[in-house]
Image (cartoon, rainbow, N blue to C red):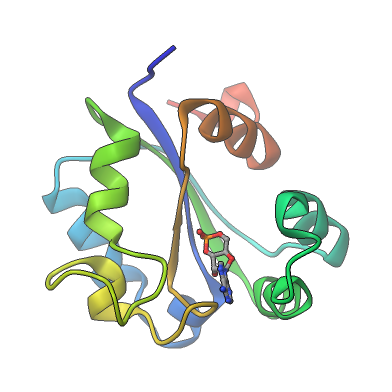
Length: 139
Ligand code: CMP
């Protein structure tokens, strides 16, 4: 079932570089409504579980180390066609390949340190949202 919500994280690199405001401005300007938001830090266990699908990939260890090294902003965004529109807004995983004007083109520095996450499907958005938020934290 298609829903109108997606899940995002502003990753540790984005917070370290003071980019929260700039990224949120892009998200708001693109017409997304923030329905949930928190500053949090993933534990080793959290990150291993969140990225379990990548556990056999060579970049997994580096990804977990990166995602646990500092706080993140976790958020749930609402907009018609949220999944596809948000992935278009953030751009390709690799910032070198990301289109001009996308969040990753503007704010990301590498394939791993790519500033933001965006869910790739409605099913994963629901799973990822439930990982970080309870129902009473969504508005
Ligand atoms: P994201 O799509 O948010 O979630 C999975 C993450 O794994 C992805 O962002 C990248 O940060 C990371 N990733 C995916 N592919 C690679 C790769 N080939 N090398 C390094 N990191 C990767």
